[in-house]
Length: 185
Image 1 (tube, rainbow, N blue to C red):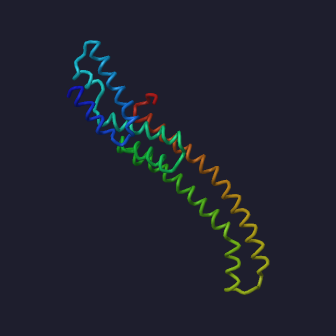
Image 2 (cartoon, one colour):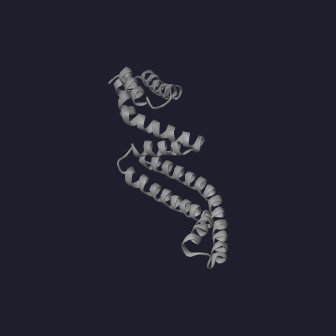
Image 3 (tube, helix red, strand yellow):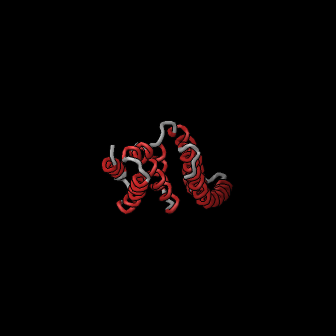
């Protein structure tokens, strides 16, 4: 495989990346060829040094998605970063997806708990229809206390959500570093 074929294959594998960023990535590899040819290597030798364009593209896309998730905190960005990293290695399904699903499960459980506690006064009012007014004031007081706890937990979930986002992002970066063999990103 020569320079042209390598760059065409790399570009087609980077089609998910916006054109401006894709051109920057491709420029770096054109530089590799220029430097390699100036030092007396053939195009085939430079291609062998660089490796498989498909794996290079997966690695570049994973880095790109992680940088996007760092720059703009959103669920789609972290999901894309996670999926791009999973595509690098089969073992990432277990080592990346497992812990992340666990964190998301804990977060979702806490959010549901906050929601249920917050709507507890409504549940107390609805219980009047089934049990009558007996002990209504006690039930209502308890539900107001639970509602306050639910609101506090809801506010805490915003901070915990940001914390979990950063933890997941750091774990994805750590996983990517391990896949690359401990080389810095």
